[in-house]
Length: 230
Image (cartoon, helix red, strand yellow):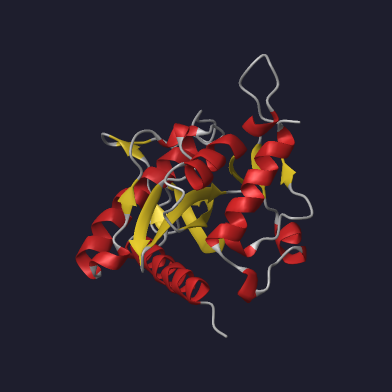
């Protein structure tokens, strides 16, 4: 028996991956970061490259382009909309309503193996608490990049090496999970840590297609959140 939920979200995954690759292909997979006429990456000792701001820059570029691209190229079922408010208080960057499923898309700029997904408390709020009757899916869309010198013009640029993605719904967290211990308060809160999904963990804990559903993942996230409160 086919899993219509799984088929629908995999169709969306295929489409958004194609859109993303086509967007970067327009620029030859090379992006120059400029303020006025200055290349902000010109100096290899710049303060942006090693900061968290760099990830936000790539994410903002892609979200903006996806909003425009999806409206121009596809029907309303696949239009990308940015999240309301700040992405610093949300577990995702943009979303799309497709086949009555709200797909939450978390864009991750990945330079050296970024395995973090989102803070558990934010994920719990967005996926479990907010509008629980709405069927959801959570897609992690990774932009693999590096900084290098372009052979076209000898300028330091952002090179897009690959695009990859996976769904939270494909992972079995029923036997445990991985997370970091990031915390912004003097009082430790385990749920402020970010859920982790390194490739080896995903490969070992893949769900069978027939088990993949919003309800199943919602229950697992809720269990992670409540177990961290103990």
